[in-house]
Length: 148
Image (cartoon, rainbow, N blue to C red):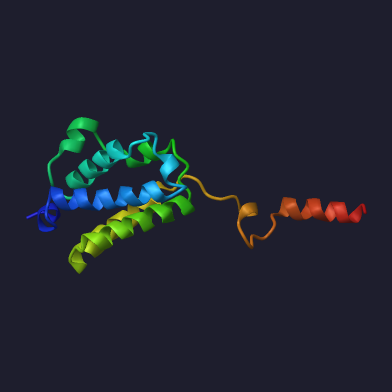
């Protein structure tokens, strides 16, 4: 028996993805990252992917080929904030799915690792709160105080 079968098959993954995209639609950072106004096509793709990954029908591969997750996410600016927002939406979806503790932990572990792997943009050190100035920034500010 596969993980897919153990958690209830297609219907379970549809519920999880449905709640996830309900939350995405409310998020001002995540929603604009989806090219379609209607999140339905994105929900269909994620459902097919998760179903296939966890041992269900291979529809995703038949329709879309290899998942190539990093490549498919490259056009989008995925920074730690958007990753964390994505994970919050997915956490809500898993909580509402009420999987067994083992199934929840297994699925969450995968989703968390996948989310971290999709990050392709890091905030600049200068814009991070409490960031220490770089050598260039310190030398520039030091030059300006020496000439004053």
